[in-house]
Length: 330
Length: 180
Image (tube, rainbow over all chains, first blue to last red; front, side, top):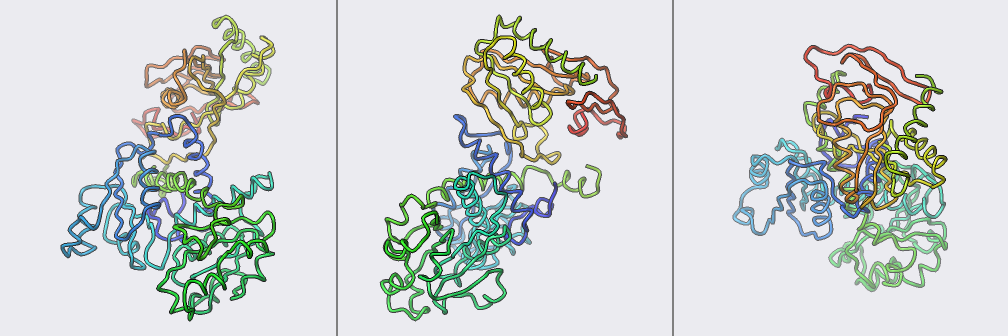
C-alpha cells in the first residue's frame, strides 16, 4: 500500500495522487473522523515531528485547519507569520524556506500567491511540502476535503456505502479561471467518477478548458441546475468583474448567483458547496448557504480529519522505511 | 489447533472471565484490529450465552499509537469503534497472537483515551512468547513456544506455524506484524 505520494513525501497537486491515492486519503480520513469524535480527540501518531505552517498569503480557515490537524496528531507546529518575518525586510522566498528547513522541520505547509510556488519549494527543501494553495494553480487539500464531504453526504442520502462519486453530477459555478479550488476539485472529483459541468462567463473560463476532464461548459446556469446533484459555488472577487465584462457584482449575482429563486430549480436532493469565505448576497444567498442542503459547514468540519490524513500519510513513515519498501525488503 | 479446539478455548476463556470478574457486570470486550476482531465477537457471544446479558463489543485499531511509526509504514485503516465510555468498566482486550507485547502496549495507551477503565485484562488465542515488554496475558487459548524465525497464523480455521527467512540480529519487534 505504499504509493507514489508516500515515496515522494510531498502533496503539491491532486495529480500526484491519482484515483487510488485520493481514495487512500479518504479512507484514512475516516479513521480521523472517528478520532475527532472521541472525548480525547488527539492521538500520539506524529509525536516528535515538527510542522511549519508558512502562509505568505492571507488565510484563516485553511491555516487554522492545518494547525489543528497537526496538533491533534501531537506534532509540534511553527506558524510563520510572514508580515512579522524577514520577508518584509526583503528576504527572498528561497532564503525564507531554506531557513525554516534548516531548523529541521519535517514538513512545510505552504500557501503562496504565485502559481507553482509549492513545486519550487519542494526542490529547495528537505522537508515534505504540502501545498495549501499556490496562486491560481492548485489547492489539493481543499479538493480532498470537498470530495470527502460530498461522498459522506451521498452515503447518508443513499444510505449506501458508495466508494467513489460515480455518476454524481457536479456543477461548478463562478470564476473558474482564477480559482485553484476549481482546478483541484475538477481533477479530484473527475478522478472519482463525477460528471462535471462548469458555469462561468466566457472570460472567466480557463484558457485550455477543452483539455479539462469535464462534461460540459456553459454560460447559462438556469438550464443546468435541474440536472445537478451538487452545486459548487466559487467565491467571486470584485476585481474580476471588469475581466468578465460585467458592470458590477449585482450583475454577476443576476446572471450567476445562486439566489433563493434560482436554487428552487435544483432537485430536492441537490447539495450546495462553497469553499469559503462567502460573499453573501453575491455568489450565493444566505438562505441557500445556510439551508438544509448546504454542506458548507461540513466542509469546514471535515478539513481537520482530511488534513490529519494527509499529514499522517506524508510523515507517518520515515525515508529509510520508504526506501526499504522500495527495495522490496520491507 | 483446529476450529473445534478454538471453539473450546474460547468457551473456556469466557468461563474464566466470568469466574474471575464474578459475572459480566461492567464488562466490555474490545478486539484489536484486525486479527483480534473475529475472536472478540465470538467471545462476547459466549459471554452472553453464559451470563444471559449482552456484552458491549468494541474494535480498536492501534496504528496511531504504535511505537514504530516512522520506522515502517503504518497505515491507519481499520475503524475504531468503542460503543461505551470505558470509565469504571472492566475491559477485556482480545487479540489473536501475543508476541512482543508492543501491540498491547499501544492498545493500553489508546484505551486510556476512552476513559479510565477500572481494570484491563488481556485475552489471546495464542501466546507465542518473545515478549519485549513487561506484559502478560490473563487468558490464553494456547501457549505455543516458537522460534523467532517462525510465523504463527491464527484464523477461525485454526492455527498454523510457518517459517520465513530473517536476517541475523533481527529482534522480534522488527519482524512484520502480519506474520506475528
